[in-house]
Image 1 (cartoon, helix red, strand yellow):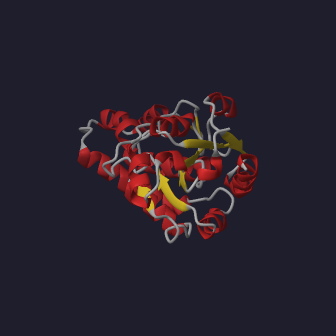
Image 2 (tube, rainbow, N blue to C red):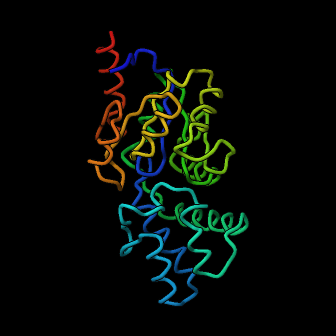
Length: 242
């Protein structure tokens, strides 16, 4: 293990890490797709298939909805609907998904308590996601995290989308640390790759929709069951480093 005594900041992924992905996004996406289908069962089935949505609250492992930005996963929706896949369409979809996910938002564990504890210990905290920034901020407010998060970035914030290093670099600049003093906590191989691309550490959580085997295969610095175990891991890491 690399020297973890120098961890000064923690950057969280959102969906699958702080937010229960299937219980939030399953019913939310279903609701939005039904609205887009406008009563056509055939069109709904086509939209659901393009989204990897199975049933009411389950996504196939390769679904782009899991970890890609709206500009990727909603582009096929535009094609099916006969609409241009342009900024106006994606903004419309982001707005609909924001409203729908707020109606179904479910947390993983107790992120408010965990992040408050970490902030109290002096860690600088941020959030990056391939969701829209406005949605990320709305979710953070609803979960009671907005007062401890010093940085929030989405795919549309101007720093690039994961796995690009831009969001991590921007967070480092915002809180005045080096990227090698940051640990990125996420539930996917994409999060691990983002950390690696930026020179940060990566801690994986097993609360997301993707397979644990694929996540472990991405070789994060550590794997914990959920964010609830993160404070204990940080304490253990200090002891090991010492």
